[in-house]
Length: 478
Ligand code: ADP
Image (cartoon, rainbow, N blue to C red; front, side):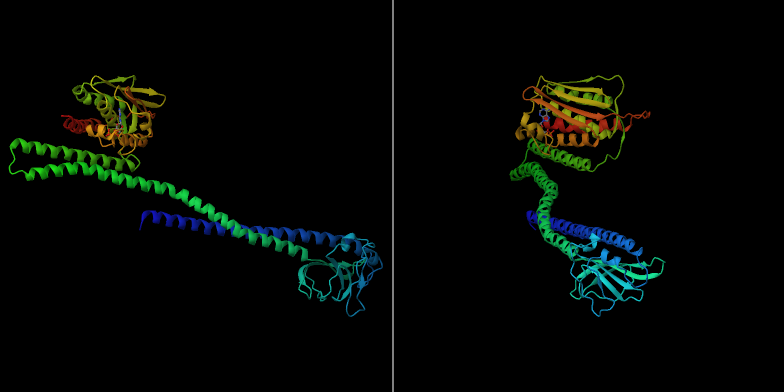
């Protein structure tokens, strides 16, 4: 499948997952919100009914004398009380708003009804709805419906006479019409709001999926670029070798000197390939963090070793190579000595390579707080300002032709950067075209007071490095 299509499909899939997950979360939140509103209103409603009932109960109980008989005081308390004890059907008198003793009962939606101890309806008052079931239910809280399906919420309390006899029951209730219509409006706004929110989430998801895909896309592009660069780098020596062999095969006879020349060309290209593959392997290994073999490495020794190692090479091209070590005590860091050798040698080799005859390369070593500072300074050709941000990129060369002449692959500084990062250090470069460059490496010092001996592999590595680097460099130069 085309990679761009794959990325697009992955982005769509990711956005869809976001939408589904966010949709579910949002729906749950909406449901929770609705339940919370519902609960808060039911609690408020219950409190209101309870307090009305309490007031009525207290005002009435003091006056009741005989069970099941409403005293005249009830007429004063409930302006439109309707005595149903003798009637078959109980029709409610309309409310007279001017005549009321307990204002709450005249409030719209509230009704009161009285039952005797046998559960027979005695009287009704307030905004009593027609068609409410008259069968007495002794449950304290009830939700009931009239014959039109309208809902009511009511409370039942017992009443007692002055001499503590059971008088009967009082039920206070109210219509839930207002409450239900409020809940319906909440429900409607949630139902309408959800698709709108989902639409906004879909847009945000698309954008977020794009953001999430960006690093993957970028690293894919980098890998693509890297593969193309590697192929390009490998092709050059392979093509040179192929052409040399081809032309040699076309010759009817080869003199010994010609054969030697051809073999030397092939060998040079072989070395180029070997060093390129070695660099690539090193970079691949450096990418796999963290450092495997950690040891105590003495930077003073590494710098002195490398100065000694490259002195001959520098002299051969007319460059003075020296070191200025401004520390009394050895600067030790915990790291990988192989990698540290490689780090500093890459910087020194570059400095010597890019410094014309008569120039100078100085390696400084000093301490700053808990860091070791290594500076490789040259009086060479320098690097243009606009090229500085790119010189650490893999295969990047400031000037391909110029660099190719030196046999560089453009991986040297990428390796330096990777090693510095693995050692939790910092890398900086300052350069002025035509005047020279300074590469500064800052590495955290080992601050543990452990008395460890510098690894013996340091010396072994030094020989190995010196030998390899010298061979490659000298072969390229002469
Ligand atoms: P190369 O193997 O080509 O030297 P590097 O990664 O080591 O690759 O360096 C990248 C580029 O940075 C080189 O092409 C070179 O032009 C430039 N460069 C590196 N070090 C120096 C230096 N000391 N002076 C001038 N240019 C340098």
